[in-house]
Length: 101
Image (cartoon, rainbow, N blue to C red; front, side, top):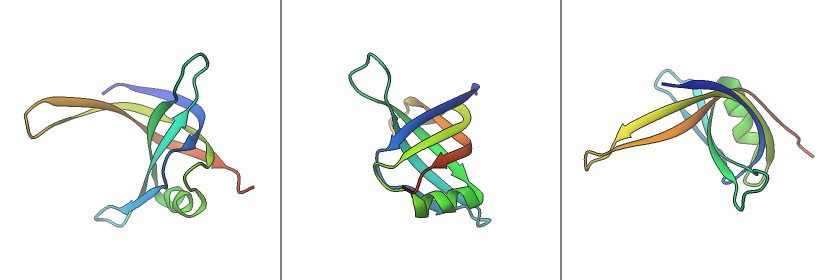
């Protein structure tokens, strides 16, 4: 499991998805598009926000909102029903910022 610090600004590609763990800890899943200079399309980041910060994101953000994210990137994997292994990156956010303007 590789972990590296990332800081980026992007826009939400869809509305935030708020869930709760069995111990009632809030977790918000975000899909953030980050524009890369010299590339045709955005780089999509899967972002996970925890606790009170997650609840605030679910209320204040919506598709198209611009936001700042600081967090650790983790490489995760899972096995499909067919038995193949798929990998993806997920940013575990420490700090998020956005404007209500």
